[in-house]
Image (cartoon, rainbow, N blue to C red; front, side, top):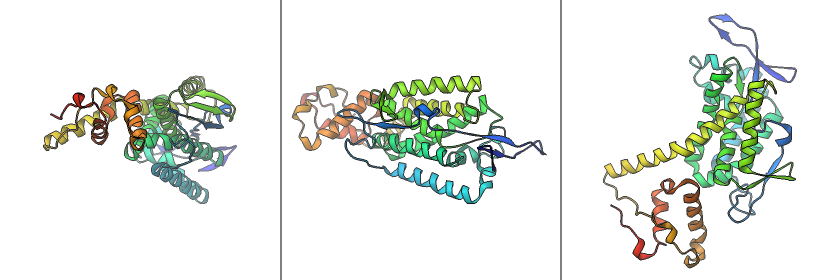
Length: 313
C-alpha cells in the first residue's frame, strides 16, 4: 500500500492476472466536515459520554478497541504494505475471508483514525454500560462485518479500510437507547441523537448513489447502521430466548416474572438501589421486557408489590 494524492492504493490479483492498482476507499466515522466535531451532554435520563453524568469513564471493550486500532495504525506506519493482505476487497472476499474483520483495524491517516476513535470514545462507553461488554463487542463486530457485506453489493470494486462501519453501529445503538440525547456539533449546535443518525443516513445514501465524496465508503457506513439495527432489534432477543430455553432444558430455575413492572413505586425504593431500578426500567422502556437478563429480572422482582409477584414456572 502506498500514498498517492492523499489516498491509499492497493494492488490485488484477479483471475491470476495482475490488476491495476485500485483506489482504497476509506470509511470515516463522520462523513462530512460539518459533523466532524461533536460532544455529548446529558442529564437525568440522558446519557453522558460515559453513561455516568459528570464522569469520563472508558469502559473495558472501548479501551481494548481503541488500543488495538492505535497499535495497528503504528504498525501500518512502519509497514506500509500491511494493507495489501488485510484490507477488504469485496471481489476477493471468498479467497481472503479474514479481511472482513481485519479491515476494521486499518486506517488511512491520522485524521481517519482520529475521528473514528473520537466517535468510539464519545459514544462507546454509554452503549457498553447499557449492553454489557459481551453484547457490545458483538454489536461492534456485527456492524463492521455488515458494512463490508453491503459494500460487496453496491461497491464490489472498491477496497475498503477503517473502523467506521463498526463505529456507525455504536452511534446507532446510542441513538436507539437515548434518541433525544443532544449531540453538540462543533460543540455549539445541539442535534438529538436520532436526527444525527437520520442526517448521516441521508448523506451516505446521497453520496453513495451520486458518487459524491469519492474515497469514502458510504455503503459501509450504511451497512454499519443496518447491522446494528438488526442486532439490537432481533439478534439480542433471539439470543436471550435461546439462553432461557437452554436453561430450561438443563432444569435451571427460571427468573421470576416482572410483567407488572409498572406497579413498582420508585419513591419507596431505597436510594442505594434506586439508580439500578431506574436503569432496568429505562431498559424495559427502550428495548422491551424481553431484553432483561435473569439477574435483572430477579433484582427487579424484589421491588414489586407482594400481591403482584409471579413465581417462576
